[in-house]
Amino acid sequence: MLIVQPATSKFLNLDDLNATTGNFGFRGEALASISEVSVLEIVTRTCGRPNGYKKVLKGCKCLYLGIDDDRKEVGTTVVVRDLFYNQPVRRNYIQSSPNKVLQSIKKCVMRLALVCPNISFKVIDIERENELFCTHSASSPLSLLTNGFGMEISTSLHDIEVEHDFMKLSGYISGPCNTLNMKALEYVCIHVIVQF
Image (cartoon, one colour):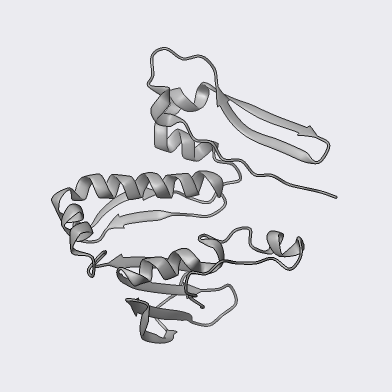
């Protein structure tokens, strides 16, 4: 479990680009950035391993690194505590409108879930013991759209898939709809697959 300091990443060849797909925060840089302004706890266990591993960081300094025998399920859990503990202005903003911040985090994770429907996500407000958002692994984002926005939205979507030369576009698009505020539901994710 490596957390690297933010840096500009360089590719030696195009194969390196494909090796980074599926990472959240290019090569761990997002986690390094979060660890600078919070207490960050990462617990992970991979398939086939007898136990998990745990790392706790604060201000990018490792407070704990070791085996976690309590981790039974396969996967990774990231817990962020004391966000912006070292940045008083931002900390005060969070404390003045916690619901707004939590909704913003929920929307951010929703975007990740739509891009990677094969990964399960869960967002929990630890202080209130409230589950804000939960997805289950699926082959397409359609079930997530149904759970997140309702049946009316998902039934109005049309499946699109276009392939031309070396480019491929796939996803869902809505038809004209006057009864709903579709502006709030606009999500665009573009994957470019280049084949030589």
